[in-house]
Structure formats: structure tokens, C-alpha cells
Amino acid sequence: MQPPENAVVLCVDEKTGIQALDRTQPMLPLRAKKARCWTNEYVRHGTRTVLASLEVKSGKVFAHVKETRTSADFLSFLDELVKRYEDQRLYVVLDNLNTHKNEKARNWLRLHPNVSFHYTPTHASWVNLIECFFSILTRQGLQQSVHKSGQDLERFLKAYFAKYNDHCQPFHWTKGPEKLQHIIELT
Image (tube, rainbow, N blue to C red; front, side, top):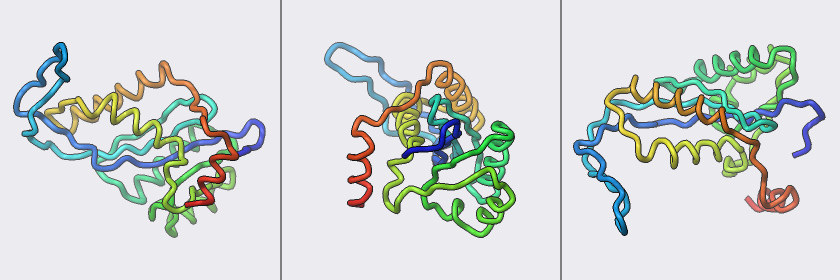
């Protein structure tokens, strides 16, 4: 809640099971007094996983799109983060997912002394700001999108990340640290 001055704080997590859905009929446009609607019938073209980090100071998102969610994928993503922030001290906020706490992750952490992991309380992954970004991605990008293939979904996600970063800003807690600390203690 109070990182050292000049610290790079990154909120990291995965969004799994993003479906490449192709609707069997086109979406119907918005009309007066009628919301946009679409058929419930679709063709599924596989899934993708997004591994993402949100830089707390700027709000910028760095992400990989993968077909799997494995320890190797997670550690490869961390290697990319270390390269992006070369010679900087990284404070990484994570939830308690098995790939974040297993032996491979602990070994990786030992080899990277400039990185420290900070875990959210159990059942409180919502305090990780990357979840705010995932909510925005879902509401603005995924809920109304149609994808004819997994590759189409990947292209869409990468374009979304680039556009998001063009206009992003840091998130600000509206409850304040004292209220947030009280909520965390209750969970």
C-alpha cells in the first residue's frame, strides 16, 4: 500500500478461457428503446489466455496471449517483464494461484533478486488492480465481439491492448487505504 519511492509496482494475473465465439447471426443494431441484441447460438473456435501486468504508476498494460496457462507460460511472461524493466526493482502483486506459488515460481524468484512477489489475501484477488483492467476488457471489448478463429481473437486482443495503452491512466482507489485495509482484514 506504500511502495518505496521510484518502485515499479506491477499487478499481474491471468484471464483464462477467453472464447473465440462466432455468432450464427449478425448482431442486431441499437434502436430507440431497444438494446443491441444477438442470438444465443454460436460456434466456438477455441479459447485463449491473457497473461497481463498493469503498471500502477501509469496504468499501462503489458500482455501476452497464449493458448495455455502453465507454469512455463507464467515464468516466460515474468522473464519478459524483467527485460522490459531492466535494472529496476519490481514489486509484483499476485493472487494465490498455484502457478504463482509453486516450486518453479519460488526457484525463479531466487534467481531474480530484483523482483519480489506480494500476494493478495486469499479470496481477495479483487484488490489486484489488474482485475479492474480485465473488467474493462470484458465489458468494452469481449462481450460484444465476434471472432471467426482463435487467431482472429488474438489479433483483436493485441489491438485492444495497444489502443488501451494509448489512453490509459492510473487507477485510483475511491475507498482510500484505511477502508481498503479494513475490507481486506474482514475477508
